[in-house]
Image (cartoon, rainbow, N blue to C red; front, side, top):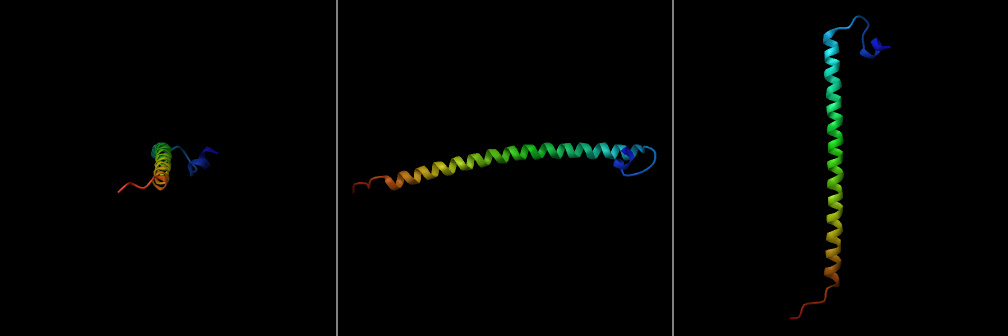
Length: 70
């Protein structure tokens, strides 16, 4: 089974094992980056929603304001 997962039949080639370890590390790095970017995106989305709600409340206040005396 392990040989099938490595993609070849035969003895352990140190170059292949080294490349596999390098690729596994790269996958872990990319997964970590994805988690970080998703958290950053969630924070930015929440901030944008908050800003939109603040702008809507300002817009409502402007429409309900009494006209200025001239």
